[in-house]
Amino acid sequence: MSLGCAGGEQIFSCTSCFDIRYNVIMTPGKDGNAEAQAVLQWMEQAVGSRLLEYLVASTAEELPGLVAGDSTPSTEQVEVVVAFRQMQAAIPDELDNESAVNVVRSWLRQIGPDGRSVARSLHEHSIGDDGEESAPAAPDGIGAALVALALNAYPAFLLSPDPVMSGVMDELNISVTSGLFQDPQMTAFTESALTDQVLKDAFRHESEHVSRYAMVYRNTGSGSSVQLVMLPDLLLRSAWRHLSERASAYDLASQALIELQLVRDALAGIPRTVAAKLAFTGVLLPLGGELSVSNGIVRPVARTDRRVAPDSLSGQLTGTDSSGSSVVVNYDGDVILEYKYPYRVMTSKQALGSELQPWPQDLRSPESLEQAVLRLRFSLMLAVNRPERAQLLPTWRYVDDPLGFGRASSWNDPRQGPSFMPLQLTDAETRSWQEWYNQLSTVHVNRIELALSRVLRAIAERRESSDVLIDSVIAWENLFGTKEGEPTFRVTTCLAILLEDTFQARVDLRKRLAAIYSLRSKVVHGSGNLKEHDYPKCQEALEIAIRAIRALTTARTDILELADGSARSQALLLDAGSPRPEAPAHQVDPDPNVVRVESGVEGSSGEPPSTPASD
Image (cartoon, rainbow, N blue to C red; front, side):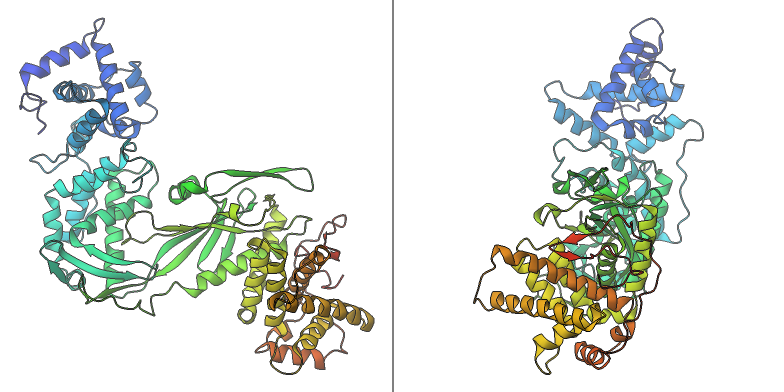
């Protein structure tokens, strides 16, 4: 065992110090048990319980008994405790606790003559005769070097948060990076990488201060230089993000090989996907509730998902719905869209210091992802039939970029928008949500995406009634707007034909809509401000937009299939005398005792498509 004691000898072979401490610790009825407990408690405070479990080859269930002295350690575990005690004795008394902790952590990541870290050697010694850590097979030299680096770096991932860096660099564990740079396998990795044609071409640049590096752009929206010597660090961190909290060193090494192949493929232009996670608040899914979307799944947030959630979003909102049920949601999200993100990478021939080049046009975020989000949010609103409007509010999003540094996430604080009511969805409402999502995922809905997005903005982002009014009328115009003829008459008439059955009902509705249109024009052109009695008209404009979208995507898909607002309006005007088709019945039946009434307008985003679009 190549671990040095305070006197410079090998810990497990230095008779002068080992026998004394072994006898003291193992002698029953003396101070041995107390000293062993004290050493283990000291180590637990210094490195955390998870790493201590690894060092003494224990489990989460067994460790408390060892630390408390309630269970008898094996001979190998006692020898490791002796090593801890020797390390403790070697720390100068004048060091404060924080400095002493740093000494212990540095000691554990040192690499011995056998190529193993101290932490790994202690772990393998604790296991006993068959203690050598198993390793996955690597396909080539660079893979073998990465596996060796992973086995030595694994203990650093188990360290408890550094008290000095906590809250500042929680993602960038300095212990991992420091240990890698001390490991001789880093040289083997970089040398092997330069024999790989894909990696050699990517890491084409070299400078006196940076050594080998690549200029890498990704369609995650990030671009930076990546040093070859930092690639193992990136790969191991990316691998760790995919693992459970109880993953082994073997698991880390296996996943690191997967990440290496992913990066190789991406650099070679081979299509690959990475996981994107988009979190939402506002609703809770029922137990086991999930939705399927194209290239993804919607599910409840798991504890591991919150690792990448910004700390600034911590907090909860409690609300009581119309049935009297209390619902608590988290501002950092309770629903996750986990999406297979098509990952694309491009390396640049431009070296550091060169003139900045425009962002590559073909490295944009996939449009399909934004379309899925838009449809998920809108379909939930249509699916839930309650007095309270169901909302799916974005909180944070994260793309698992294997070449990204740190926690590359973006976020939106739902507390900055209008208030919302938390809702617990039922199984029936979740099924309805899935059906509405499918309904909105037809290709023809792409033509009215502006209307969908403006309605969502009016609901979830706008605090001022004037903004709600403007967004809602823009949605009207996206549905039936045209440069031909008089736009106010044409848009309002089409909405009236779409939403009402009888001639008089259409005349009455068109008159109200024309008044709303006139109000919008006054606000936009600065010729008048909203009065208090105008506020209901703003909400009515919003409800009309929602009802029109509902009708087009269910009862009047024949109109939705037309190319643009001009064609849609013309078709409705020419077909004004025909009976309005019924919407397909594929939603949950609404509660007959619940009628949503908002700003004097019956009906709501909660109406299922099995009911008529008019009231």
